[in-house]
Structures are given as structure tokens and as C-alpha cells.
Length: 421
Image (cartoon, rainbow, N blue to C red; front, side, top):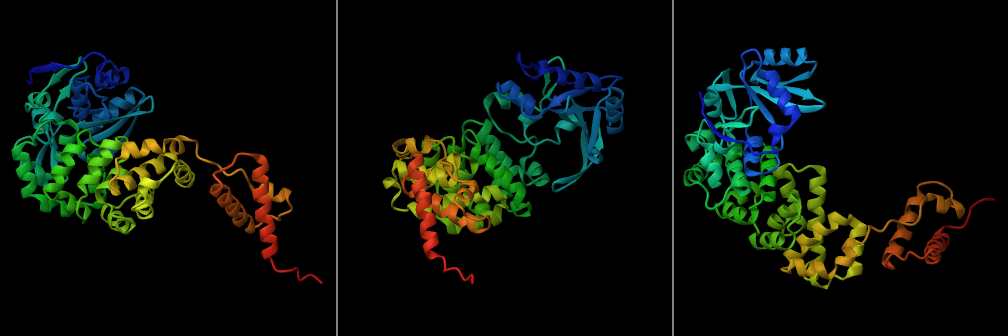
């Protein structure tokens, strides 16, 4: 029986009625249930718990039966591996039966159910992720994770190479967890195992690598850890190009709220020609690829000229890209040009902070001027909006009407004469 190693602090998820309800439900009839993993780790660190995962001695059919008896919906999300999702007030809780590995082969494993949290803990990656909390807030620590948590030391459970061979993504998870939760140098055994088994990353899908890499770039200590990861060769292996550590450091120092994609751009983009390589290697989503392309194009456009950007130019960027998008892309372009980002952003802040200019015209304005509905309307509106932008987005209605009338007059002069009889 595992002794109580600690207690959750007041105000943690232990005081959450939904958590108390599901733990009480699953702990009936001789079974036990615990909150496990990241939620416990984060609660002990004073952080938001994130997803709350439940481990239980009850096997999946029993979990389903208990949920049904309590009037709760359950979803067999991974029932062959022991996982059932139970909904309480539309809130999902992933419930997994305690397990032990019978045989492992890469990410997949043959498992059998267990009633021992010690056996279940041996399947997990890092000691700080193998903490179990009861409904009364008592924390059980079957693998010595608490000392590592207090020391902010990310350490594999058991043999590091064995844990990595079970799932090579744990190489990147090691770096990400060290950047998010660790302090000081990386655990030597973990570091050596990661370097020795780095070839295993080639077996992983681009989607899994992408998700973990972007989390690493967004982590609390990314400024310290990413350079070490890059210098060990992992950045070039993942990104297919040399990491640009100086621009990355300048971005984090001057634009700490930069998105993960902006951080990726600062680290990996020399210009727009690099976008397709990164898009393919990381299988970026459409929105992520678009944000990366915006940064790449702005690097090209402002190369050698970023310092000359003025407030009207910044406002034009906001009009073109949107406020947040313009700020992130501009941060990347500025660091690519070697600028002090904080100082350069301050100089154009009025343009970036102003609301995104919206075209003052619609199709109704053209119809009122006798323009028939049709595809030609879009070209007229686009030409008028470009002229309005070039004049600095005047908000005077008289001048706006003059701009539109001028576009319509020019268009009328360009049209061929009528061929009507």
C-alpha cells in the first residue's frame, strides 16, 4: 500500500464538486479512483490543472455501468486500452483503468489491467507525471516523483532509454517538460539517452512532432532550452535547416507574447522561400501555414528597411493582416533585420494599436450610384479601398465619397463605348 506523500493545497481541484463526484462514483463497491498525472503535478506547483485525468481499479465495463447507474453519459474513447470518457455537466473526464505493460513495441503496447498504482506508474514517462491524488487531497508517490518535482528535475521513470524506445516522442517531451517545469541543467541520463536515440524521431508522424515542437517553443524557459536543443542538433533534424538562435532570442526578449508560429518563424525562416519546407516537414495547419507565410513575406518586404517603418506603414499592415497577425509578423521581420524589437515596436505602436481599418463601402454604395450588381463590383470596391489605404484611411465622409466617385469616373473612361443600336 502506498503511503501518503503530500496533500494538495487548498483551492485545488480537490475542492471541485465534479471531480469529487466522479472519484466518489468510481471508488464505490471496493474500487479505488485517483486523479493522476499533470493535474496533480500542476496543483502542487500552484499552476492551473489543465485536463483532469482519472485512474481507477474499475475495469471499463464497470466504469460504464457505474456511470449509467448515476445517470451519466460515457463514451468508449479507448476502451480496448482501458479508457472511457465520462461526462459530468457536459464536462469530459478521461477515466483509464490501472494497467501494466505485458509487451511494448514502439508507441503501442500489450497491456493487462491492474489494481496496483505502482504497476500503473511504471508505464508513465517522467516521475513528476506519476503522482496520484485521492478525493481527500492525499497525494501518493509510487516512483519518487515528489523530490524531483520540488527540485524541478525532469527525470524518466526507470531506465531512460527503455522509456524512450517505448515512444520516441518522449525525446521532444523531455525537452518540452524541462523548458516548462524544469530548472537548471537537463538530467544527464535523460540527455544522453535522448542524444543516443535521436534517430527514432524519424519514425514519428510529422503531426506528432509538430504539436510537441510548438509546445516547446511556447514553454516558460524556451529562451534557455531551445538553444541547447538546437546546439545538440535536434532543431536541424526537426526543421531541416539551421536554427537562427540570435533572432529567436531577440524575439522572446522584445515580443514575449509572440505566438508559437511567430517563434517558429524567428527560429527557422530566412524568408518566404523557407515556408514550404517547414509546412511540409511539420504538416502545419492552413492557419499556421498562413501565419508563417505572412511572416516570411514581411521578412522579404522589409529586409534592410524595417527600421524605416513608420506609424502609417504599421497601420497599413494592420489593415492588410489584422492587428494580432500584423504584430506577430512584424516582430519576426524586425528581429530578422537585427532590430531591438521592443524599441522598434514602441515607435510604431499608435499604428499597431489602432483598430483595424474597415472599408467604408459596400455593394449598396455602388448600387446607389447606378452600378449594376455583378462580378465587377468587387474590382471597384478593391480599387477604392486601395486608394483609401494609400491616403491613410481618411474617415471624412466627404473625402470618402470623392475617392469612390474618382474610381467610378476612371472606370467609366476605361470601358468601351456602348454597342447598343
